[in-house]
Length: 245
Image (cartoon, rainbow, N blue to C red; front, side, top):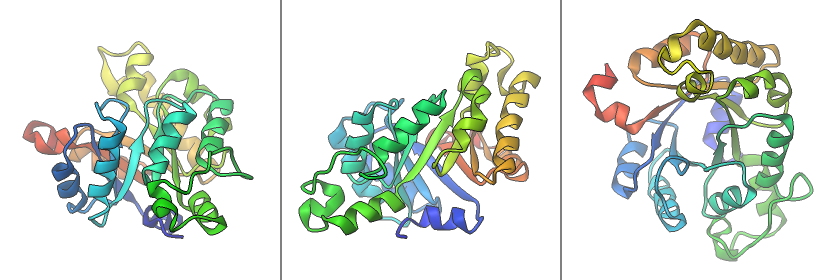
């Protein structure tokens, strides 16, 4: 296995990452040297072209961190483009059903495990220098799959979704509070907390890893205490002193 994030997760270690939603290869490189295990190039909320996504991946590869891409949706085209450009992990937002989770897996993995289209001419296979059956198997084994649950509907289906062949369930607390009509109360509303705890409890039941996004260092430490093995924070939360406290 050549994905160190997967290795750490399999060894029950906590991993952490930083989301970057603005195009800056310099920022990606700096963040990659800050001690994070992974850098998420956020192409859901960020305004990246696919060429820029590739350049951001290349910048992260110069550091100890692993490049992940958050795609705009579960559309297989988005997943294929991110992986062909060298992403070692895919994060898919707003998954709400078992069927959608299955489609994500099929889009990530080459046949026979999935339906990902094969092209040995792309960057991920070193433009054909690393093609063939070994490349296909290594990609299927190493790509880190993260499914985001951030709506009440998705969390209602958590038991079925979490049982699929995915590496991580990610909780998006802000989206969850808004979709649950608790925007004015935020992530600390009892209903939102209950939904979040339902995901953590489901993960513990079948020994599946659960990750959550945090807004500051206090939340970071609190979520580790609650059992999060995979924690993400946005780059602006690190830069902004008011959020980092």
